[in-house]
Image (cartoon, rainbow, N blue to C red; front, side, top):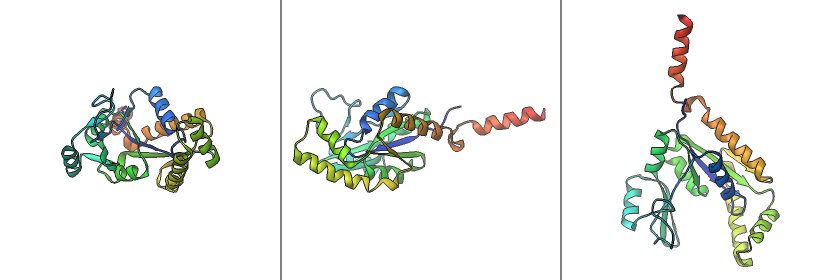
Length: 210
């Protein structure tokens, strides 16, 4: 008995483990698809259209926004980024969930879209801010100035925690992954999301009467 496909929003401050958790979820359930963003920036070496991004012209992107074909969009450093609606609707018809890696602003836009009733939003918190900073420094990729900027942005992100359906504290990666699996399993089993459940119960009652 299939369920109606969900729009699973996974957000967190940088360094809280969101990317690792998203990868683990998709390894756990191969039917879960990742939302491929559209962008107006030029492809980088090795990037493939439709796999890493949908590369569009600014005019094409604006037309998609105008025609409500973007679930969310934003301008970043002079380029547009957004989540196309078409592939998500196709996945929903096939009973497959779509995972979104967006911030709170993108999440708000998706909730306000025509598909907002199918959203399950999850925010991942670090166990503490010092631990978050330690994780950022462990990467060894950023200067002190960049890390300070990321920490400031993290505080702004965390302030929107109450806008999400679920909030997890990622102290142990395995435990947090198990919690994410439980959330998805429970949401998929909701009565109003199980296609064919009404017909099954109707048939069941008819068998009882006969």
